[in-house]
Length: 265
Image (cartoon, rainbow, N blue to C red; front, side, top):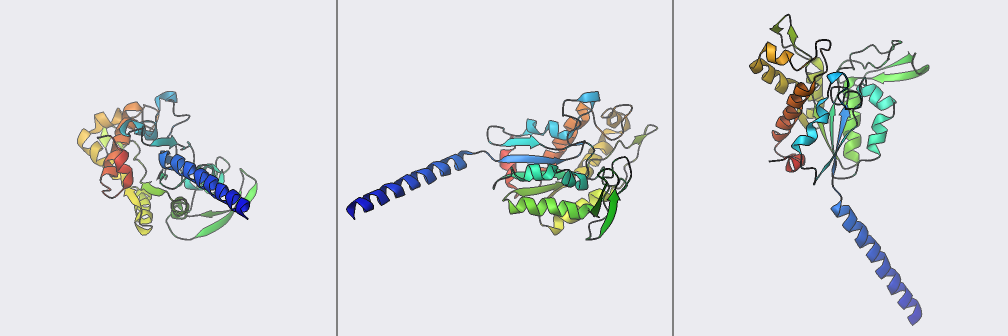
């Protein structure tokens, strides 16, 4: 009996030691900020091909990387729908742990057709629960397509379920300069992104409006220099840096967001 108790005690001590060591590793592990979105967050491979850059490539400049990791999983050409259907979101979700953060920015490609033969990436306009079954000519399969808001809610709720903090950004504005005139238009997707974020009680960065306010002050000539001559959607390095700074500006306005403690002072 004494021998059994001895072995039991040793087993308990060993188990406690294992758990303690795991706890130390977990406590010492840095949180990760995951970025998901389209080419305006990461263009191409994020190496400035064609002089085009997404703001996610410069966001790390504003954070203390000794305390937090940043992973940019955005992919050009994707909408909320195709970021889901291509398995891109699942590949991020499996990596998320409690204490992590997810910043999402979509909208530029969600307005595309639902079932065209080029990309079939569009979503139903709005934030409701509507759905439509279509034949996807790309995958050659039937597919149920939902609203832009439905997919955003999916990202938000699944990130929350993993213990992460989701933050929604409205999509950046396209080049608003035409014939030397600055014309700042209203973006429906920016409004829908805000509505979803508020309904789900998560942080919202009105990136679209923050950038437009800066554009208004800078004027047409300066704003036009943030884009290449042949591209009205994707920014060059200078434009991407302005947008990254705008993300941080919007983040700082979220006073209770824990991500702010990792921002450089």
